[in-house]
Image 1: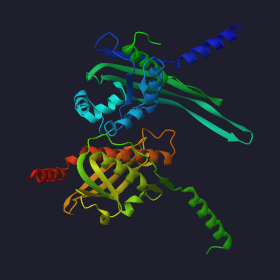
Image 2 (image 1 turned 180 degrees about the horizontal axis):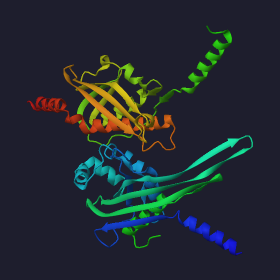
Image 3 (image 1 turned 60 degrees about the horizontal axis):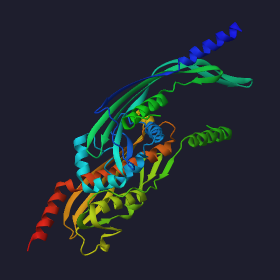
Image 4 (image 1 turned 90 degrees about the vertical axis):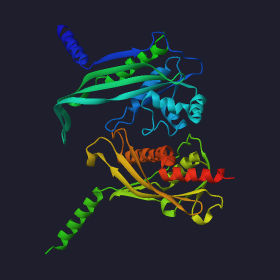
Length: 220
Length: 203
């Protein structure tokens, strides 16, 4: 019995090592929830103008899904980009509010934004990196069978910043920065056993909940 | 020198090695969104040469990308956003007598960069276009070099052909963006438009 408790505790401690640590910092212009009328929509867009990285499309999709879980309406990213083509392509997307103001002053762009009832843009900028890879694993196969032996670990770091722009008064309503990191393991004990740290999903749920709190008191 | 058996073994080995190299053949069939812009009140003609319509890029020995139809669709949509009336023609002989401006596109070069060459985790495509621009009466206005660039977010979980296709579509969209953003900023086109305005304002 005592041995079983020991194994369970050791397994729990090991699994605990796979947990992700997520830090969220935010700035908001006001503590009151942002105005969100019936029919208004949010668009979550990933920055794609940097040369060496692109904001992860899967992360943008995950966040949109998380936001849709609440009462907030989210217009899919590609649908919005196509609707206002070519003004939100990597080459042309406004990087700051002055450029956005000039763009929205154009009646044809304003009309498209209004047609799609887009009230807020949420820009996501960031990426994930794999660092500190350690260990090695080898897999063999032969006439009598095969298997993997060894141990490997790596650290995944996700850093994303979200900036909320109001398209009605063309102001910035807030910023949220999420840093999430965790260590994943791969154990080779005949069969490879992956113990993956949920870094991206933690960052997505953390950022999603924080973002929802900008629009509603009822986060869930 | 070689016995018959050795020759057969050699031929078989060469045939096996040749089988290891693979060729990527891609045809880009893609629709593009309409351009959001205020078209200028001119009658434009886009003359598409046959080699442009069936253009097949060969950025390296083993990759063929057929971008002909896709780039015709893209340029048609982009110019329809720029001008109120646009004719897409196969030859100059089909020009409407009231055409104000004629554009003849050509592809100068298509370049491809893959992770195995660049050691980056992305596929990149560059398309270099040239637009010969002239007035409806045949007076040359400019020959404009227009580069476009596209890349994949990463190469994870993408096959080589899927990645090249994705990067090419991004590059074609970029060509549309570049055109809409910069066409009326070309100094010679700007001067031509001013001259046209002066002519129209003359009593």
